[in-house]
Structures are given as structure tokens and as C-alpha cells.
Image (cartoon, rainbow, N blue to C red):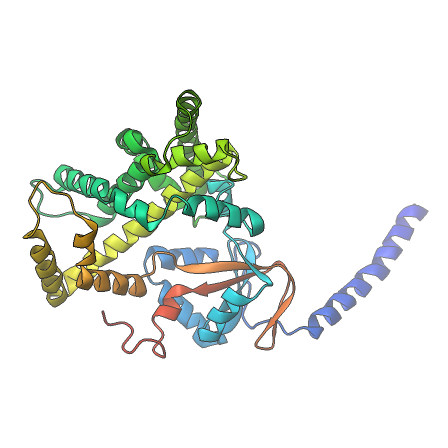
Length: 396
């Protein structure tokens, strides 16, 4: 009994002392205005809802109007500082105390990949991947891309008067990136894993709680199936390399190239890392490309004058190509107006809605304190629709 009384007395003395110290510590620093909302949940569901309804720009602007260009919130379980303005852009990309980071959900779904690596690992992986994904490789695969697009259009548009663009664009984007990554096995992979990649893509911005029937749980299940299928292909390619020896990088698909470089000791990745990076590459390419195609089609449907100019440019190029001939790099280089329209679509609706950074140490910005471990976020749509940077920013 005496022991319990002693413990109670110590707690009675310690708790007020700790609270006082914590309060004084906080007063020393000026945290950004705003609120963190409910513990863990914060503003997560509110933000995710606006992303699905494509109203995230209004959501961010309302928050900036209320709290100013620097404010705090809580997203996906992390206290986060929302920044706005051109100064914020320079601060995020030049401050050594901030490191690129991804959401907990993406790290769990994509594994050890270029989407989640940091520091020296990230540099090595970028170097290994960029060695293959060069402009020359894009030119070499242009004919294959043309073939995939034609086949996809023939299969999905013949005899139809209307089309739901996003599923069409997702399947097309997946077919193209799989042709680059897997080579001759691409059609089978695309057919077998299309629904799993779609489920995985939908889970990237989910709340990372593995409960049955949640987006995150479904995404983890899809991730495991995709990883298993890619691992099986990697084993086959590795055996083939052992039998045939090293191959010319310019004549191989991406998975063979990465395994070949592994056998040469050219990078630090294990075979499991290669599988994860291939999965991340397919996720990123499919998601961003399909969003661009979808909103490009949407804007063209809304702007008949722009549609006429794009159509005329494409017709002019088509007149100089036989129906059986594939597009060449020179043909693509002549699509100057189409390229401008695509770039404007990217500005209006960025496929990646923002950039997360993690404060690796306590830092200051515009008189506000950002504690170590907090996330820093900037919404691309806010920057792209800024009247100070773009006259009439909401006009195409």
C-alpha cells in the first residue's frame, strides 16, 4: 500500500512538471496556424473525397484563404504543413532539411522501389533505370507503342458510339508500359493483371489500415498477386540469361535489362528490389498517362475550336503515312499543336496532385517552426492555377 501511495505521489508531482515543460517548449516555437483535426484521421477523408470529385483545388484554396500560405493539417496519419506560393516551391525543392517521401500506403503497396527510396539508394536506382529509359529507347519503342494503340482501338472502339475514357485509357497505358517492361509476354501480363493494377492504383491514396473490404486491404492483395506474377517472369528471364549470357541492352526489354545489370554488379538492387521497382514503374506510368489522356479528351470535347486544330494537325500527318506504316519520331515531332494542348492539360489537371517531403530536422519557414518528422506538402494544382504565374489560369 505504501508503495502505491509513493507511486501516486511521484506521478502527482511529475505530470504537472512535464505538462509545464511541454507548454513552455511549445511557446518557444511558432507553429503554423490551422488545426490537426481528429487524432490520426485529421483531414484525410475530407481531402480524399475532394480528390475523387476533382475539387481538390477548391479545397486547398479555401484552406489557404482561411489560414494563409502556411498552415498545418493532418493527412494520412501525419501532421503536415501545407505551403503555397512561388517561395514555397523554391523552399521545398532546395531545402536540405526536407527529403522526398511517400505515403504509408504507397510504401506498403509498392515495397522497396524508386517511389520510396531515399538518399544514396535513390541515386543508384535512378541511375540504373535511366540507363534504359533514355530518349533513344522511347524512339525505338515508338513503333511498338503505335501497334499497341492500334490494337487497343480496334478491340475497344469498333462499332461503338460512346466510350468511358478512364478505363479505356488505363488499359491502353498499361498495355504500352507492359510492352516496354515485359516484351513478348506483355499481352498475357496485361490481360492477367489489368484489374489488379487498377485496384492497386485506387489504393495508393487510401487510409493505411488493413481491414477487410477497405481500399487498402484490396490494394495489398492486388500487390501480392502482381509481385508473384512479376517474380515468376524474373526467374524465367534470369535462367535464360544464365544460359545465353549477356545481351545487348538495346535489344532487350526492361526486366531483362535490369537483371542483366544485376549480374554485372552495376547496381545495388536484389532481384526482389527489381520486381518492386518494375511494379512501381508500371503503377506510375499507368496512373499518370491515363489521367492525362482522360482530361485531354475531356478538354477537347469542351473546346471544339481546339479539337478542330488538333484534328487538322493529325490529318495532315496521316496524309503522309500509309495505313500500314507505324508512326516515326519525325511524325511525333510534327505534332507541335497537339503537344501544346497536352501540356496545357497537364497544367490544368496535374496527374500527381502534390509533393510530400519529410522534415529530417526542425526547420523554419516564413517565421513558422516545422518540427522534425512533420510532413511538408505543396499542391501542384494551386501553383498551376496561380493568377500571378498564368494569366487567366482556368482557361485552356
